[in-house]
Image (cartoon, rainbow, N blue to C red):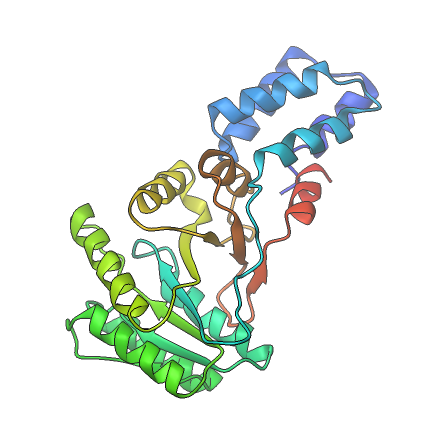
Length: 278
């Protein structure tokens, strides 16, 4: 993920050619930074002095990240509700399973609602993870009303005084309005019983600019508070976290690094930026 290491080495040695700059530009675009952000970064690099280029780049990159709070809105005095949204295929249900493990490891009581009622595989998957991790999963009828499952889930979470309630939602894209209306209904139904504290959008980091489009689409319709970037391992190109925050202002809160239950980490902006430079 060290997008800038080759440039920095050549810059310090004073051996940069026009071909090197063109290669650097191509690398940034291929790393999903997008044309506009790439040009802004190149302008900063070209104007920097050899001794200052690393700090100049670090400062410029930092301004592109979201200034919003990355901390999860956990409420110690009541059940914290987290709505997980995103299109099918991004790793949404797997991310919910990883969140179960993440919170369970912190000795927090978790309840999950399997509100993706249109995919039997998603329900089976989340139930299997729940049994393995020791987290109760509320399910409904196949192709039943997702909002009803979510309501049953929040009632159970409150009755059991759970610390965390997570809702796995559907991600069908057959019509934009149908999906967004459904999510809005789920939100309204839950909020009759308890506030929703986080709406986390799951984005596949390997989808590049399409991931940014998804973030913009969901932000238009639901109040997204944070992102979960999946596949942020060797298969991802690295720049998508920077690009998506620069364009949407939504903070990345979690990153997924693999398929096991432990492969979920809080996103640390400073470490991420330094990783781009090192």
